Image 1 (cartoon, helix red, strand yellow):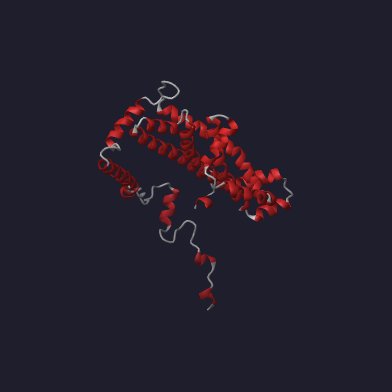
Image 2: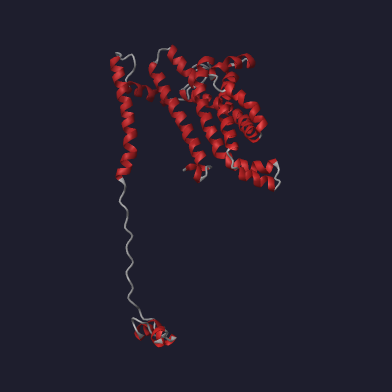
Length: 309
């Protein structure tokens, strides 16, 4: 009975020179470097191109643009051509963009110079707002006393229309250009302050407890804990602020004059050139879309995977 259950090692393991299936011949073939038949490698099958996915990505935007152009054409026919048709506006746009950087005086410049002037004002006002707003957001979110001190002020001033600040800027700075920059600054600062403060307040308490245990300085807490954790919220505030700044600059330039896309729209209205007004509307939308897309890509590059999902 015992010998039927427990076997000796020689009865279980085959000899080194033999294989339980092929016997001695396979071992001798390997030893003699004789070629052995191997299974042929399977060819990699190429996946077919996903035409359906491409069609679903391309078709909806094309249909949306076609719907807009169709509505535009019907409105043009219904108003007796007082609103120019898409074809007429396209011909005018070709002429406008054929020489976008001409200059025939301070009040007669190409659309390229007007766009660059508006972007310059947006960059200056937005940059000043970032320099002030982001550190202020960190301080308000980090210290409870400052949060209770400034939250009522932010709640009071944030709903004020940006153009309501323009007369204050004209009164203080005595000039149209600094007043426009001031208006952009005051309307861009709130999204950055609020989003940065919220990001600081949402940092897990475990991180701060570890910082207290390690007796880290405020600078170490900021550089090693707060800044990496708050960066996605901060970039979201920056994206919202730049969109607001681009909206405000058009209205501010209509009121202050000078070179800029907003002033260009108002000047074309005074000349009753509706085609150029429609062209300016599309240009404003495209520039705003490009700014939004660039900041979304920037925010995605610095956002953690769990935040993205």
